[in-house]
Amino acid sequence: MTGNAARTHTTPIVVDTHVAERLALALRCATVSYEPSDTAEPAEPSDAEFLRLGAHLEQSFPLVHTELELERFGHSRLYRWPGVEPDRVSAILLAHQDVVPVDDLRRWTHPPFAGVVDDEFIWGRGAIDDKSRLIAILEAVESALAAGIRPRHTIYLAFGHDEEVFGDDGAVRMAQRLRESGVHADLLLDEGGVILNGLADGIDRPVASIMVGEKGYATVRLSVSAVGGHSSMPGKQTAVGRIARAVGRLQDHPMPLRLTPVVSDMVTRLRHVMPAYRRRLLRFAGLATPVITRILAARPQTESLVRTTTAPTVIRGGVKPNVLPQQAEALVNFRILPGDSVASVLEHCRKVVRDADVRIELVGMTSEPSLGKPPGPAFDMIARLAESVVPGIAVTTGIVPGATDSRHYDDLAATRCNFAPILLTKADVETIHGTDERISLVNYARLIEFNRRLIDQLAAPPRTQGADA
Image (cartoon, rainbow, N blue to C red):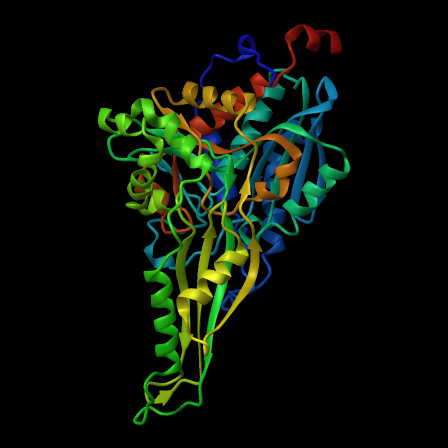
């Protein structure tokens, strides 16, 4: 990777009224992606909202839209920033424009698409996932262009519009275009990891998890058909009861705990900030493995690192209190640990449910676990930048428990990192896809600063720029 410490700007980024308002305006665009199963809502996102967001980007970042090449794929936007040496690609920076629907408007402190800015936060759906990253990247690029900065090697910005519904029309098409163009970057950077307080007991500092892969995804439908009838003469078990029993079995018998190589590396990198007794334990790796997995499994935030998780999310059946249901079904979502697969999830369901009358099948989109290459120089650069923006943190690796657009680009970069240098609490994390999503002004400043410093690291040396001019 290119390193240009001498080029790093020294003036800290400040989120003034204008900077905050540019993000707030983006949050006011209700660029919602709906699952086909969201029957209460339109199946297609609003073209008008995406067009409004696109117009906002072009008006707010004029240098970006003058000096970078832009290709559109539906509402997705692929920018090419040619380098002084344009045939090599240093980075592909990903973000997405779409957001998930809002469940209960009444629970929000401010309306989710009002884009309210107060003395501490910028509020709205997408404030963390993922419009803050998108706008922060553009803020950093606009700032670099204004300063006369040009990258040594070409940089791509890929902003999908359907990440929340698996990226088939956005990221998949943009990744294919890059593939056809022979692009292979040093770094792929996307959402996923953040900096957390209280990641593990005994670690007394925030931990930055720079993810190097992600779990797979599958939703299994359990369904039962029955004769029905009057509720005064039920059989031993109704269709609803049978489905409830199947769901209970799956929840009571999760897939086994397992320590993968990437999580083993994560623990090793954190060893120096662990209490002395845990450091001693880690000397005996073989004996320590069961203990490590049990410790990580004790919290929902870390259990996902050591098992394929089981999450019953939907259950349906019956029409009236006095009518035996003829149909019942449940949806169970699995996030698949590397080493497991979609096929092994199905096999696990059949083995655990043990009911021939319960039909078990996959529904919707699936993806296998995606594990990038081992950390290299690009990972080390991201780690150094994170430490420069948020001093005093510990840095480690990990795997993204959810699905991101970056899985579509895995073969296009030597190193994949899923990370944003924002310091979050457990309460902050719960707002993502939840109620009262917001980003603090301090975190937003960190996000812009991080991207600006990244661009400085990838910049052409001044002498080369002067010759090129």
